[in-house]
Image 1 (tube, helix red, strand yellow):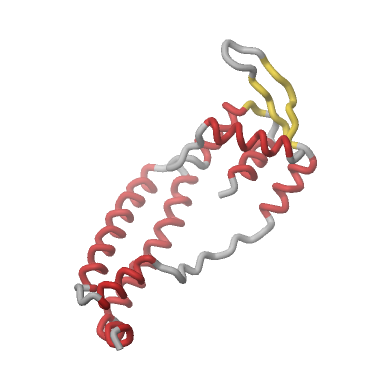
Image 2: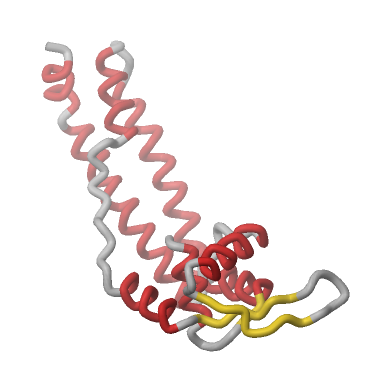
Amino acid sequence: MSIGHTLLGLLESGPRHGYDLKRVFDEKFGHDRPLHYGQVYSTMSRLLKNGLVVVDGIEAGDGPERKRYAITEAGITDVERWLTTPEKPEPYLQSTLYTKVVLALLTHRNAADVLDIQRAEHLRSMRILTDRKRKGDLADQLICDHALFHLEADLRWLELTAARLDRLREAVTR
């Protein structure tokens, strides 16, 4: 996720302080990975330097001064470009799990055990995500669905690989 673009997008609804940007980001996107304040302020500093935001006001408070940031036209254009640029699908061609299965075969270990252990971990993760989805709001449900669909694809791969272990053993130990 591009934190800079996400913060810029949040500024399109109006100027905000760094604290408010962090709060809204965490509420909308940071359930599993909340932003650190330092990350917000270093990102805003970079966006300011690049002309994508301006300081719309400074307020004195009990602590340090609070800067209110506003998005510029260049920032709006940058967000638009980012939103309309497709993300490259991740083909998973360098799979750690595949490497573990092949290494198990090459070292005469039980590759089926490797697959079984991974299957159990995937199922555990799916139970947690399903519970979170059941209790969550629409945003949580969509995020969980995305993760669950990836885990389901992984489970299909695990089953397919388990069914082909003898052939894979022959291919990699020649």
